[in-house]
Length: 94
Image (cartoon, rainbow, N blue to C red; front, side, top):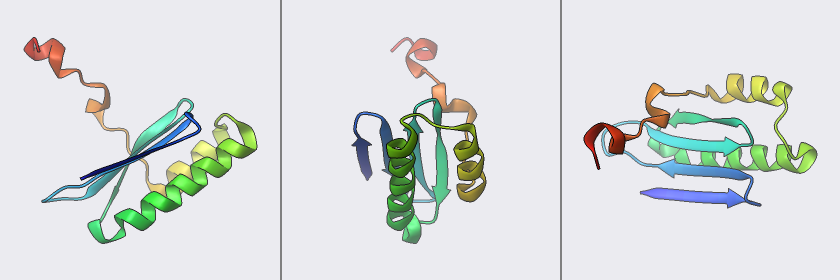
């Protein structure tokens, strides 16, 4: 399952399900992006919470602030996996 929402072409929040593990909430806003891992039963409510916070920040500043990044990362335990920019097509010639 994948749910993808974009707010004003500036904020994206996507939810990816997993059969065997944690769900992933991917977000991007300005130069700020990452993944938040969440249990399946909390995935929808957490995605909604994140979407509201990012949209509120966007409406307020139109670009992410360092203060917001620090508080958001701490509150939501944001991860930036090493492979977020991995391009398999170059490695496997796809």
